[in-house]
Length: 395
Image (cartoon, rainbow, N blue to C red; front, side):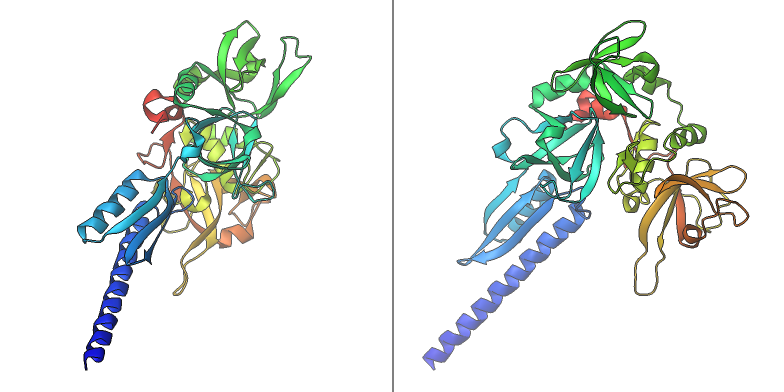
């Protein structure tokens, strides 16, 4: 009888421990769902397991508030635990937890290797947060919060002081689709190419050129008729449907490139993202994220309330057993025949009007609705200028 009691007590004890572990995991899942519902923009890779009658918290995150909430909630429920969670940036980086894109376009990949999928791109001068390293690759977060890997050749690492000084310095922005930075004022030698939206720090100017400096210290000259002082350009911007149309058409014929965000090649959401960038806005990276910003302007799916510059979304409509799936985005132009412009094979015009020579039957059939960004207060639609401000740059 004594042995039976011992067995029963041990059984009940093990069962209680398993219940505790289940509850602890439920807390962890709840924190993740609250703070990191989209792994593209928030890193929360934390696991809880039982080790020698203790709970071991392991993994990593770049979300201090989420980590604090997890620790607080577990303590509130009287869990004791061993905490081995790493809060990024990784200490191996030392003070170099920031970077500036140093090429005309930096390729940012889904994994830390050159053969990995191109996740997105960042333009010259884009400020980045650096979270950890893997060989010659760095996990970075772009101003639209996207998390991906970039190789060391595409960026210039900086400490906080260097990063702050770089970001608040006077800048120029390149406003033509594509061009060059020259090594001299005679334009006989090139330093590098540059694309629309590229930003460099300003040194001096004359009647014809701006003298600029790269993050890595190289200097060069940009033609004044192809660029502008950033603050002047931004302050004079008047975002509108007409400006969106004009800038979007600058991309006409640019090839489709999965992950692309420049005139060298763009995917559908990279195209809309960069067009809006040149209207002064940082917007979410992917189509499935962009549909969550702004306001719904076409609940009836009849195109009647659309205005030039609205974003149009396409994909698979929701069914009883499947959620809506957004796979494509374009920009409504309207004009006389229901035009929209998008990147599909290349940047081109299409139409929802069956009588138009640009009629796109396939996309019209899978239209999901439209969102308006212009003149909307939305935390997902941010100011381009903000990413270079002293107050925001280190957040």
